[in-house]
Length: 94
Image (spheres, one colour):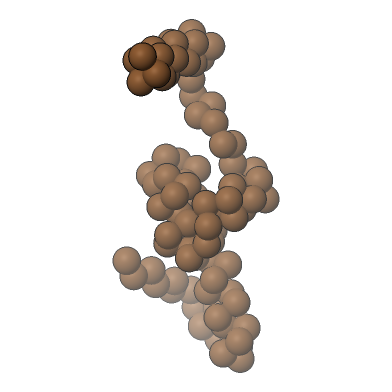
């Protein structure tokens, strides 16, 4: 995946390699967090892309205000999902 940022105002700013690398890393984090927020990738995949453990991704999600849970579900859908998970767990135990 190649990401190119074209902006005339940014092109004229001279940065040291260290500052440029830091800015690129923050831009990458923002891009990955946006993909995570809209459901395009999982937290595990985000961790692989960013080169950090999944728990670090969860901390980043807090920082970016991204919920760990699917906020689009209503209470009934969540209840059904929990029931299905319980059935699967009970089958595995038996």
